[in-house]
Amino acid sequence: MTVKYRTTGLVFGKTDKNETDQSISVFTKDFGRLEITAKAVRKITSKLRAGVDVFYLSEVEFIQGKNNKTLTDAAKIKKFNCTNISRQIATDLDRFVKGQEKDEQIFNLVIETLEKRENSRLLYQYFFWNFLALQGFRLSIENCATCHSKINPYNIYFSAKDGGALCKNCFNRTRSCKKINSDVVKILKLIFNKEWGIVSRLKVEQYSKDLLKEVYEDSVKTFCPEYC
Image (cartoon, rainbow, N blue to C red; front, side):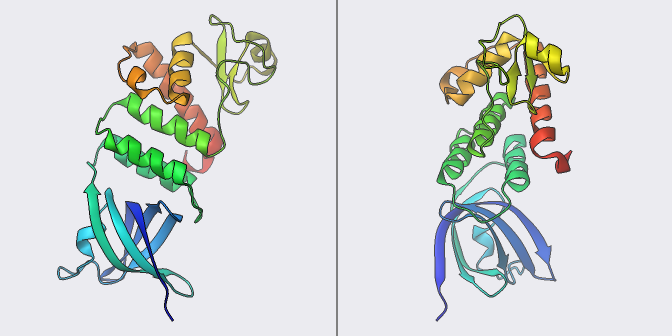
């Protein structure tokens, strides 16, 4: 007897297969990341087309075959806008989430971020750092990642490889990190505490925005070097 599975998921990618099929990448509430084959979905007459577009939150039904999953039904719940942030979230899901493993916290974070319907860089930073923490890469911000001493706000360095913020003494020993400022530490602290209401109202100088971008790029190179 064929067993059908039903779950809620975000379609974050799809790849054409053959002339009419597609492979759909879905991040689901109950199963984590799934790669599901949608047969004949590229045909105009396909009933599945309306529920599996990219950035659709949909209720999907599938069956598990010997080697792959096949889509049997899809109903759109909500459509999210295609923005720079939604595209970057899709990229991060593809980069960091490889296998099928349920993670409701990540699912909720993805939906929470997309539902804010903003396209600011700070919103993406809010998503990325909390996403990274849920992946097991929570960075030390208030204390030195190496010696655990309290960080001096005038001498702060950052190294994703070493686990986050470093004091001047530890920087002198490694010399492999970037100097940052107290504004970056403040922003990251608020983000890790999920204080989006405060973060969204911050007036951040361009210099600090640039530092945040460099910290982000350092983290991507450290935790997912194959994409750099």
